[in-house]
Length: 79
Image 1 (spheres, rainbow, N blue to C red):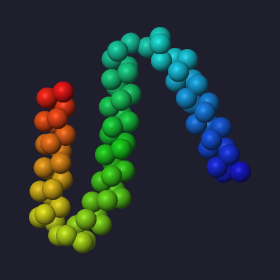
Image 2: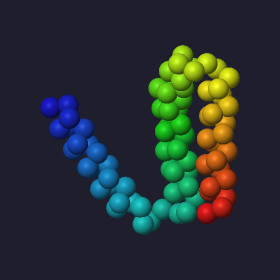
Image 3: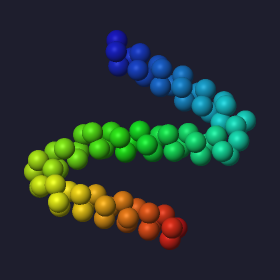
Image 4: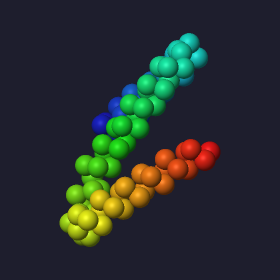
């Protein structure tokens, strides 16, 4: 029942988003995408970084995270 309700709510949310998507301004779309990106970063930070620190140590984890972030920014700028 939990998975069914999650599927129904997701489908409903997708439908509402599609319906409202054409009528919102560019600034609202950017705000929503930024909010979604922040939520994804929060999830990654909460789930993966503590395990990486435990397995590899804090120095290599911090430098690897920084390198990955800078690579993502560089690819976005070169796009």
